[in-house]
Amino acid sequence: MRYAIAYILVIVLTSPCFWFGGTLTGLLTGFPVGLVLLRAPEQLRGIVAGLITGLGGVAASVALGYFGFRLIVGPSAFGLFPLLAATAPLVFYISMDFTRSRLLYDDAAKMCRLLQNQPSSVQESVSRNIAPAATATSFRFHALGAILGIVLVFIWLLFLRRAA
Image (cartoon, rainbow, N blue to C red):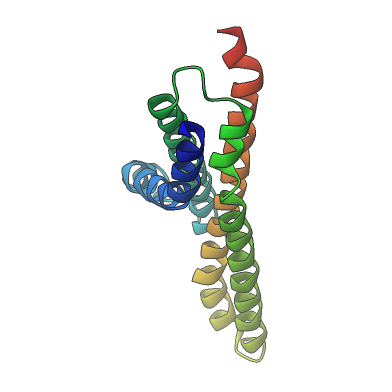
């Protein structure tokens, strides 16, 4: 019965925890990273912000699963299946980020096609400041950061945790 309660709790709370953890990570690291990368292109800032928020969201979700199982079931209860319960709901959000990224890249390409008949100075000005492309990069790297976070957590569980 304890395991069922722990699984339900982790599966239901993982999605909001992923969003909140990514947002909180973005807020806490966004300002310092923004200052460091002030002169960097928007694409690079999108890459860094996306990776950091993706990793932070996965860390928050896995921490919720780890401490939830530890609190409800016991200290040795966190294993492969609880980890799958904590990370499986994230597949929806990762695929949604890839879809958003693709749609925003398509919007940026449409904007560039619309500007083909404009003078070159207008094209250069707009192409440097296309916000959908930077946002699309951020969404894509948010998903990649989440995937990287999941891989790192599985490596931790399967190799490093057993050695400790």
